[in-house]
Length: 120
Image (cartoon, rainbow, N blue to C red):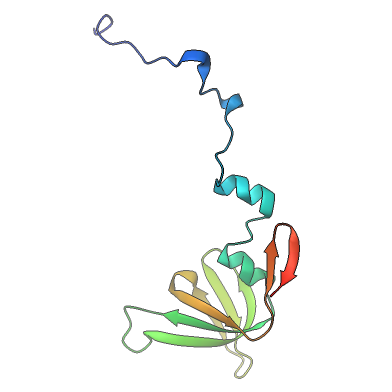
């Protein structure tokens, strides 16, 4: 119907060939291959499993628990959660990362940077 009026776009020199594409600098996927995604919060928390922390959490929709501090040992950490064991009463807390404001460490922090372990 429109065969003579509209032509499909063409790309000179086939510049968008999948084999010639390289990731731009600062690309997250490229950085993750080189550095092991060290800067993500869950990875930092995983590196510090077993350490004593205070996790400061805000629940904006709650009147009773708007700001809360969970103290204990880091048991596990995932992309969307943190599990803390309270050593004073034996309770375990599953905290969604979206509510986590910051974490205070009671011991030196393990932090992976450019494939070498460093403690700060």
